[in-house]
Length: 330
Image (cartoon, rainbow, N blue to C red; front, side, top):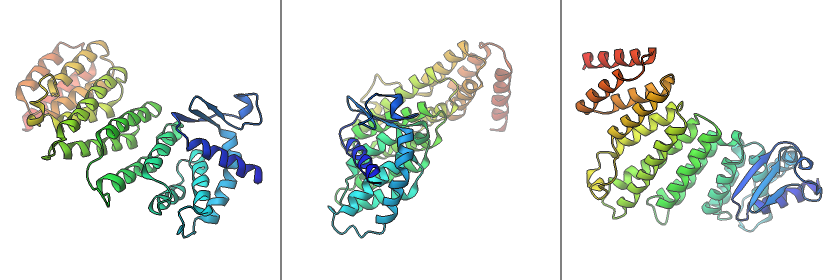
């Protein structure tokens, strides 16, 4: 028990340093290094936690959580608060779906023992630590709670999430989608970030141009994403949705004349991809989504002409039939 407590403290101390990454490693520490005195890997701000080590100390962490979760936390520097922080850290890296551990971390923030900035750093490490963690809805929801508590509904300075944090958040989301394809919980978090940008761009804030630049950053990232993830219909949906929400902001776009945030650019990409990968149904759905989202009749007609020049296949015939049916019903 005492040895497990020492390991828990050592891992938590490592997590609280300025790490770049933390990863759950399969197997035991012996498979990764020859020094048995150090139970984990820490190389150039990259932490590796052997999965079997986490399983070993998991019961001890659960015992700590159970023992101190009813503590009043009236003293922010109390031993109970530190024990809860250590226990919840180990529990979440072992079992990222542990709601009680997340709730205790919220308590620590509300009590003033732990800051939102510190928790955002920990949460980022946790989400990128394993494929299992990246797909947990409660972890993405936890990040939204942190942003809402600190920025959107902040008691002292309610307002908007800083643009630099939003850009970092978009990177984290795509990392989660790379780790776990069709990660709907990560994409829901993407919508949360875009909601914040939309509110800022539509306001009279002097910083709205900065937030529109975040949108352009998101747009360019998704365009590039589609080039390398041609079967990701979810990404295509969010790309079309992004253009639908922001292309009409002419007052902002007027200051960025070189930006082409339009359905025309999406259609060009979709047609280009289909000339190379006509057997991917997701790309035909991408083209269909563009046609449906755009209200420009001229663009729709151009798309229909482009479709006829694409390689014949069952998906092309279905798209042509669908477009015809929609036009007849309008």
